Image (cartoon, rainbow, N blue to C red; front, side, top):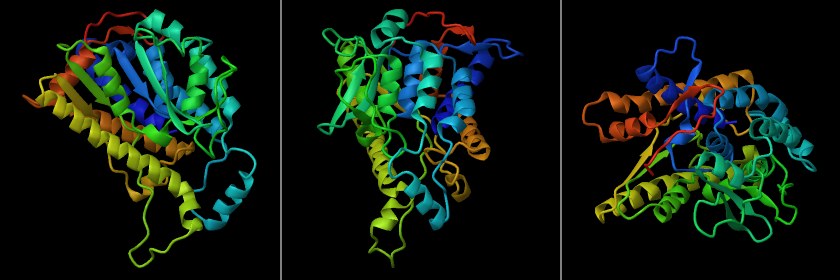
Length: 358
């Protein structure tokens, strides 16, 4: 569900830059976000966003996807408080996941239809890298469009199947087995090893770019709340503490995301010092309050939770846009260059644009 926050960040940036370029009082126009990039990488809910943006789905449609379909996909969210309520939730999940995978598949199918990775790449000329974890051998898996010579393994995989695999978070969703390619292995969420796919995207961009070509990376988070820690006088915790709120899962995914953020920024700086033109930007990300943390769980789909995610996304989108309002701010210059390269379209259009920047 925190993909609603990410979509709201991008939608806010879209509206601010569109306002500079067009008079759009009825908000019928949009920017083709995908056409601002040669490569889009995503994990879990970010993998869903990456696939849809590459396919040409408008941000307005993506926000509606989370707002309208979220409550049916997550009808029984993990309680944010109350040990008795949480234990009842755990008991109800002993033999089945908490979310409704069929609802998610139907919602994704309404957006992506039956298009495969090779078909979307031929139609849009946008490269995709979407992460998952192979269950049988516990190895990372990156689903890719055929944007590099010889990389055609995933051509016939349906975009919907890729989205189901990258977002198959343990406990929340069942293990994913792609229907479009029966001989494929089984997968779980890519967030197990690449909750922040910043390094995945940067390494793939290096392999795609010419030596003299500039690389500009824009990273958008999901406003992940910290899982919380015990007080110093209560360090000998056991299974109930780690299972409570699936703290063990969130701790691993959040810490990995932070490590990838800093490693990606360090790699970009090091490459720049060696003569490669590499810029890595991370959109502003609010530290949520204690009350807001309760509304930012992976499966929070109540009216209040969706309102909180959308609000925080608008705030951080506006804070990121402020980079462009400060003279000589290098981050603002790159951000403006990226968004000014996106063609203006109708909200329901998938018109192709031209771009020559990686």
